[in-house]
Amino acid sequence: MRTLQTTISLFIALALSLACGGGKSKDNNDNNNHFSGGSGVYVAGYVNGNAALWKDGKLQRLTNHPPNYNSATANSVFVSGTDVYVAGTDFTDIKNGDTAGATLWKNGVTQRLGSNGSRANSVFVSGGDVYVAGEQGMRPMLWKNGVRQKPSEAAQLIYSVFVSDNDVYVAGREFVSGVGGRQVVWKNGIVQTIIPSGLDISPLTLFVSDSDVYVAGYHDGIAHLWKNGVAQTLDVGSNKDNYEYGFAYSVFVSDNDVYVAGEEVYKNPKTYEQRQAKLWKNGVAQTLDAVEGDGDTRAHSVFVVK
Image 1: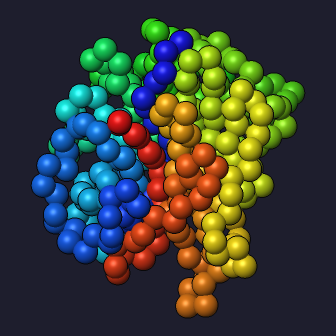
Image 2: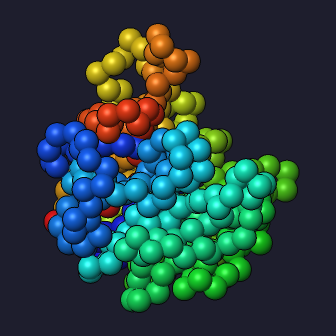
């Protein structure tokens, strides 16, 4: 199984400037060449109510809702050649009762995948085919080139999708009679044993590199990474005294480096809690800087092109 350069993720976001990309970005409209594919570190997420994408710290808002509208998020990013695909969720008119809609952005251009109540959690591109995993009205969904596919009969939720050597892997949650819900990975519709039973982790995101299967998620409020079923607790950042809990949303392997995107939540004297976007590289935490004035940051997906 060849190395996949993909990310596969569930939900959230950030406003940042990656260390490899320089200092804080103060100009949210500085988007020159932002959607050009090629080498760089891409992060999809959320900034103050809007879906957002960063390439080496340069911010591109995918939506432009009023501040604190809390109506859109970018959940997954995939780069294929010069094309940048982002899967996420957007509201069109929350004031008039519209609900979330699964959305795919290709080079910043919006395509609505599902109707009200739908969400897009993960995107993967293979051989010209675009796969998006998500849900519609609390039912799991898998779209291929915008057309709905039939998931496993037992599936309750689908978090992520990737393709390798014509094999389609899907991560999610299924219901088993007498057991209840459990987190699983399907390969071509057949359940694989990836995560030990009894661990209620969510969300569940995957990456396959050669014969190794990486799973990022959280358990008991702590960000975790599993490699072939063996758990690793991810490092808590420098603000350990005020730490409350953490999440891992995305994993990406490039050469021998393992990247995980997520967030940690801290007590804050001015607010009930403060969310900080995190990028772990080989298990070591890095806090991703926020764009000034944009409040909480959340990192939902990471994709690396070298």
